[in-house]
Structures are given as C-alpha cells and as structure tokens.
Image (cartoon, rainbow, N blue to C red; front, side, top):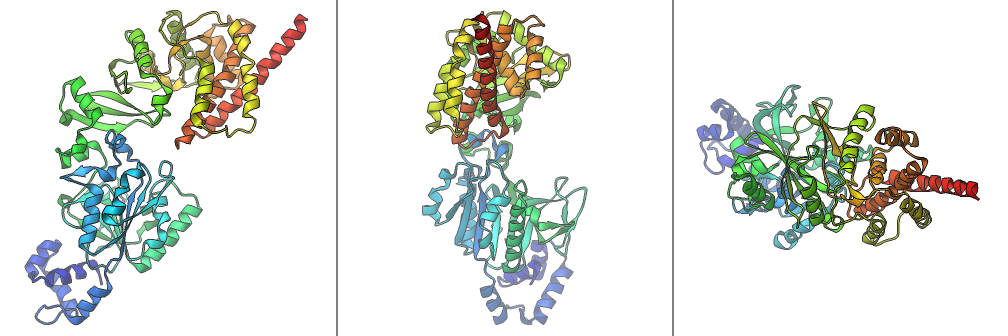
Length: 581
C-alpha cells in the first residue's frame, strides 16, 4: 500500500471528509476520490467509507518497530554553541531537539530507540534512564561521516525510522502505520539537492536543483535488508566520507519513494542563526562567546551573522562572523590547551606587539580563558612555503620582528617543554627508540647554548600558515600564543619543520633569512634546533593523540627531524672535534 493510501485510511477512520482529505494531503479532490475508489475495490473501506476488518488487521501488522537517531557528529556549523553542548541537546521552545523526537516516536508507539553518539557522548547518557534508549558509540565521528554511524546499527534497520538529531518538527512526522519505505523531503527546491519528488511519490534526478533532503526515512523489512547490505559494501570499500543517503542513489535512481513535508512544519538546526530564527529565546543562545561579542562590539545577538567555522586548527576552534558588514574571527581554545599555553603570558606578548603593522588587530583577549576576538584580515592568503618570493617576504617580517628586540618576563624553555609534553601523555612514547633519540637530542644542548648570540621575544609557532599576505604584498604574522623569550634562530628552524623542508630547502631558508651571511656554526645550530623542535612537536602530537586528535604524517615527520638532524649535528661536532685534536 502506498503512502497516500495509508494517509487516506488513517484520516477517513477519523471521519475526515473527501474535501478535507484533499486539502490535508495537498492533492486534488479527484485524486482523493480515485484513492477511495481503489481502497473500496480492495475492500479496505466499505461503501459508507468505514474501515473494514481487513484494514484493522493491516494496521496491526504494519506498525513501525524501531528508530535510529544519528547524533554522533561534531556539528561544525554549530559554533560557538557546540563548545558547550552537542547539537542534539540544543533547546528549542523549552525542550531539547532529541527529546522532542523521542517523545514524538513514543506517541506512535515506537519504544525501541537506538541513539548513535560520538561527540560529547557523555551528555546523552541521561537518555538511557529517562527514555530507556540504547546508546551506540561511534568512535570515528571526527573523521568519518554518518554512513559509519548507520553501519554500526545495520542489523536494526528493519521497519525502522532513521533520522538525524538536529531536525525539529512542529507536527509529529511519525506514524502508527507504515508500509512502503520512504525518504522525507522538504517542499523547498534547493541547488544542493538533485532529487525532485513528483505527485506519484517517485523521486526523479534533476541536475540543477531538487527538494531539500531532510534526513528522515522509514525503512521497511525488505528495504532495511537491502540498505544494510549496501552499507556493508560501502564500508568494505572504505567510503567513510559518505553520508548514509549516498547508498540510496544508484545511477541517477533513488531507491526509496519520496515523501514531502511542509516547510512550515520542520526546521533543521545546523547553525547558530537557524536556532536564533526558530527560537530567539532558547537558553543555548545565551552563550559565553556570543555574549562577549555583544559586549565588545556593542551589538545584539541578532546583529551577528554568517557564523561559520574556520578549518579546525591543531590547537583551537575558531569561527568567523559578520557584524555591520565587517568580518571578525573569534578563537575558542581547543581541548587540553589550558595545559599547553599560559594565556596570561600570551596576553603580555600581545601588549608588546599589538601596535605593529604586521600583527592582526586584537579587540579582545581574555588572559584567563584565552577567548580572543580579532579583525578578519580581508583579501589575504596564507604564505606558500614552496614559493621563494613568499618565503623571502615572510623572512623579512620575521627578521624585522627579531631586530626590534622585544622583551617579556617569560621564556619558552624548549627543553622543559619536551619534558612537560612527555608528562602530559602519561604513557611511554609509541616510538620504540624514543629514549635513544631523546638522549641524542639532549647532547645538542651544550653546542646550542655556546652559540646563542641574542635572546629576545620569539614567535615560536612560526608556521608558514601563520604568515598572511594581502593583495599589496603586505605580510602579517598572526597567532602568538606560544611566543616567549628565545634564540631567534629557533623561529627559523620552526618554519622549516612546519613546512616539511628537506635539507636543501632548509639551507635555502637560512640563506634567505641571513641574506647569505651566516657562519657554519649558526647554520648547524639551526639544524640542531630542527632536531629539538622535531622532538618537541612529536611529543606534542603524542599528547594530543591521547585526547583523540590525530595529525597523520605531520607527527611522523617531526620525529624524523629529531632522528635525522640530531645525527647530522652530532656527526658534524665529532668531525670538528677530531680536527681540533
């Protein structure tokens, strides 16, 4: 039985007239009469439009049994709210999104509900006792899309609703009766969808735009088994970046029928602004970051627009927003950064350099929690470490900064930092020869100390990505959170290892900074700093990995720098000592 026939049976049972049926189902009166005529022929209703025993038995045997709510995602577009709660627990009109969905499922008798969780999974634990749901943990939520979440419960998607946790329905979208499988689309036609729902519920491919995909589907037993096999196949083929809906598409054919929901009856909450539009009184709009923006820029939260996440950094979560047609960036410190960075020391650094034309304009910096608001540097790009001209421009700014000889009251002690990161990870290094390599790196300290000629404020995090270049070739050096007193040559080494330079490239970098006037000892001291910096950031990566963050090849490259350049410098020193004997 198709979707429209079921709706007619459910409503005619309640005494709804044909004309009212036509209005409620958004079809013509003639179409309603045709459906009723078919139902009479199949003996689902009698001549007086009353449901029959056959219908009652049909209703009894076609009750949805299960539901799967996908709630594992980070919700990148939900900044800054997702620093406090996962998106499924956002409050709308006095109740959380996921609790409203669970209550609506309970209303139609669906009690067997599984919630796939990942990001802030602990926040969902109360649902077990309150609603008797089962939690399924997706440990790969950071790296893989929701196809893996549904794969984890693939054996439980027979006669099942599948839905996201971040959608809100004014009227209950679920039913006591289901038969054919369907996918829910919104009435709105959007460029991001290639699927259009026709009057016969067929879903047609359209390359330009289609009905908005809502994320809710019903899978009967037959389609549930089919989808389960398709999920297995996708995971076997390592299609982790897919969304589960991708398995519904096969050569421009959509496997399920389409069901439309009125745009007035639903809302997706994928961003701060969507939550604001739906419920301006939501308690989750009272967010620390938003309140800071309101206070610093003297605006109302309704004046804050176009909030979106920057590429997630290694240390922080930052987002861009617009106020009065001007863009700003707000930084929210990431997981574990309170152990890595002294925000008061960072504050002191910014007090020294804030008037320099090569730094970003800081409007707010909290020395206690590290929240920061800065003006967005328009029409800039990250420097390219493989573009010689970009490297020259970056080194010119770095050299100018070093020449100003700024002084602060704290030091970035790279040797203590190595030990500090070791202590944070709380386990032995994953590298089998770590102790041997660390011992080799430590042997470089006397040579480095003997060749330090200057001690001033250094950036430390002199990543090529922290050098921005505008259309007039002005260069800006941003993100000073690791800065402290050090040997300026360390900044050169840091730039090199962030860029993944070979020895040839490192030599070229040194020549650019020193304008081809560098002694052999200083060159090898920079090599030594490459080794020390490699060990430092290798430890940093191991600590961050213990928090669930993985930096891939970057972490391996840092360890290789520690191994190869400690050996290079020690061999140089050994040969030098032999000559002096």
